[in-house]
Length: 613
Image 1 (spheres, one colour):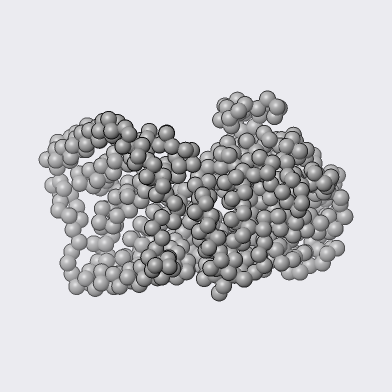
Image 2: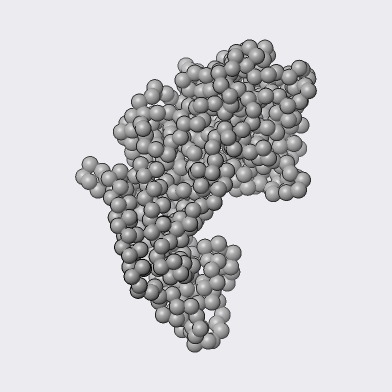
């Protein structure tokens, strides 16, 4: 690329023997990576599935709608191309040293982390590429949102989601030859960065068994049980589905009623025990609670096929029984996180019908039982997608690969969780830094195929639990009959369990609810420990009785009290009142015995190798 302005950096790549050798090696590695990808994703005809997310029907409907409104399309096109012409004129003028005014709609772009290199502003060509992209992406989003208003809600959501993903993908910052920082690095290193990057890409493809399992952190920097998930405790019970962990007390007395935590089985429980400062488990122990945690087994190819209700009966219920036997109590306080909370809702509804009193109070972390407003994940649950998952699970011996859900979660934040790593790892050839949260995120689990498809169909697609159309263990479930006292935490920026969806869930419960909205998202909104020296987020509470809650969660927040810092102490005040008297500390396995040290063996099973290995 020639100089754009006098004295500007020359971004053309030098032709040297070293550069040529490195580029040839990078091309060889890229061909090997592509062959591995095609081998994994080829269909029966030898070609990859052209529409794995079933977006083409919605695109066809959008095109028909656009054809019925030609005047709006012409008007939009004229406006877009007039602004593009102004951008081009500005570029020519700036190359001649003339200062120009920003084009309408592009006045404030300085906070976009994709365009931090100074060349995106100082170099007229790169500045034009950036502004042209921002203009085009804005027009694309606006056009889709205007035109899809006549389409069914599920098609609108799918179109807008994939439009955003497409817009993220086509950013010039993601294109090797259009990213000034990448070009400068390649010149300085004579292409060595590209060779390193292609090696990392090939390694990530092999780790994902043909799926690009992007490394978001240094996976060798952490070891479960050594420098992560290290709170002291014992495994005191296990079956083919769970290990039950009991943690060592840290206070002179403990609350009488034990606390059982049910994390999601699509992730590992140690998100609640990352390190001493971030560990909710350790914090609870330090407050005097007898803490028990379920560690779900990572299903293997050919393992026993289980349905959702099996996770309730063989997992949650058997864990409760073990906790009560270990402590000699008649009831337990429970916590359900994400899908663990959905499971807990089913259990509470089942218990309400059968007169089961084993749960004294229930806490929910970013958990849904009403899925009407469940957010972006709903776009993955049409019939074609569910059929594809069933076929994939059958091919893989009854389980879905860990990448299946990880891919969906990463797509929701594509710029942060996909494209920034593509640039850093594969273009710049840098190793990602060590970060415990991202290590946990990458240490994902496989999913039992039948159970997961049932979950997406019954809950996300059909909203059967909320609608009263779901049966488990021979009982018709009705969440309005739940009377157990509830503490529920939603996260305001949660894309996985949107605050509006959690709020709708709690409104349907027949119990009293202490509802709290935390700052940040699905993980940071929960893992937000009290720290007077580093107040990161906040939370909202309200004394308004549930019968008087407004229709929308944003209206609830508008009339709520905002408190800086962690919601954990607020929960402690609520939970302590449900936990009984103080008693002598309970040491792990005093009754049931000790199987092994925490965090146990189930959580150590990794999924970043081919299913069945």
